[in-house]
Length: 390
Image (cartoon, rainbow, N blue to C red; front, side, top):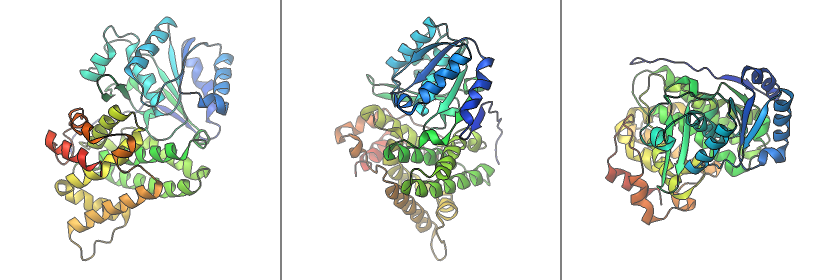
């Protein structure tokens, strides 16, 4: 392990089939005015909405609602939610849904008492909140983003074609608690399930593909990746397999709760390119990542050859005997591609609605990060984006 770091994660997790009962334990810790935040209505069809509302009522909470949070929450939706929370004099925000709902709740949390435009302050200037923030709790219904145990929040501005994530530095932005019942994920369509699985896997890759020291975080990452691969294959054949889905849900949390980033510079360029694609197409997040990953990794492979070799051997069981390092690394990416196709992931951005005339705009909208093996210039990003159409 190289460098210096701190680690703190204050989110309390309740995991398993009986985890919703613990909402009764947590709610008394917070004020009376609660804003319930959820998405397109699937929680009403499943009955989860009624269960949560009853628990809130039994705890004497005064409840307002923000409904209709979309998979890629927009800045207009953020402004709407802030107004609702302000008018309700909100004490607490309860997100019930997937990662986008959890992300959105955190964005509302830092914005309700903000005296400036939150889009300008948090997503263009990347500043930290100087105001009071609202506590957030999460009841998770989709595994993938890890938003239930981190301080990240992604918001999209369709007018400017920008999809930007801000990972806030202060751990107070992290959810106070998260309820994870794998059964809530069993009704997801296959497309959403595998998109979430790849989101998990790529979160780990973004942290893994940086640095070359003997890092404990890398060993943890390899174990998590192997777990995701194993369980994904079971879930792909039988989405109702509770054990596989529970392992996927647990891996999702640990993939992005800051643990495996310790001692790492981290990359995040797949996310930056993928989010720019998402800003142009409004496509499912995990599928934007799967569509851009392999062109990006093949581009940076020569600069991080040692780690790509290790990835091939330790994650994909590639036999290195009699092969040079480049061949081993390329076999690892080929194995990864085979797994991605096995799951039915989107492998090019054309399938997501992107057209070649968008390439320059997607590249221009890509935020350049410096923690990976190669700091990309604009021309390189344009070339990678063009390769993503193939």
